[in-house]
Image (cartoon, rainbow, N blue to C red; front, side):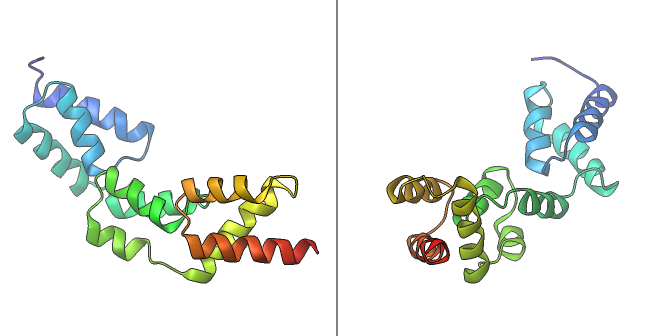
Length: 146
């Protein structure tokens, strides 16, 4: 385990957050992997949060806007896995049935009519769309091609 100074760990963390948007938990894991003690990693994350370099709410907004191919369940799971607190995920990723169906239908149209229903079902399911959403999106996609 490396014994790095607070200053060098802060510089490392700063480089990371300037490279890509990270959640607090992602940044903390990277700092810990670099050899920092838990208390030092928390302190650096606190500093980064206070200065606005990391912001889990901003991360959620960005994630939701750039992952329209994911269903509600998968989007929530991915954010939780990245360390975003459940109450923030609940606020940032509300379930909207009509929006969910439209996004699934958009994917079906993007994949084209040559993809069979079974494959479409599997693809949407793996992306976190629910049974009822998939059924309705497939029905609407079929109605629009008729």
